[in-house]
Amino acid sequence: MTTTFRDTIGLHATALILREKRNEVLASNIANAATPNFKARDFDFETALNEARAGGPLRQTDARHLSAATGGDAAMGYRVPVTASLDGNTVEPGVEQMEFSENTLRYQTSLQLLNRRISGLMTAIKGE
Image (cartoon, rainbow, N blue to C red; front, top):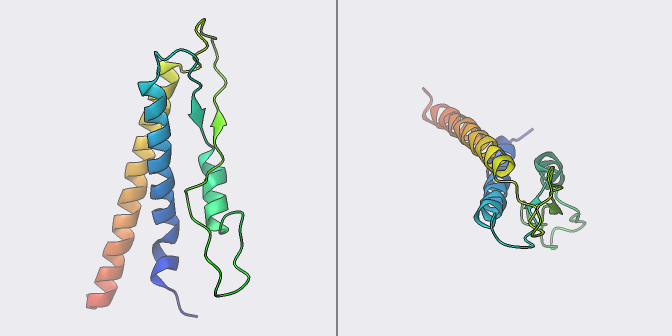
């Protein structure tokens, strides 16, 4: 059985793409913390990763079909606030900052795992 480069690093690369997308969403929430009627958005990382690993909601049935995009169409949802704001804004800065920090830490972890995987492949290619 032949293992492709994509099979070797695919999960970590997909996780990085999704973590980056989630950081953008969370940063947008934080930036709009004072915007009246702004609704905080987010998506479930695990669900998005599982969809991306499965090839997304679309499947290729023929080699000539276009492949489904990974990480581009994660199911976005609205965050339900713990304490409601009078101006209709659902951003809770403490929650958003905590989610952003956790996601950033997990992004860095995924990046380290990907780097180690690539280093291992380079070692195998060099025959060291």
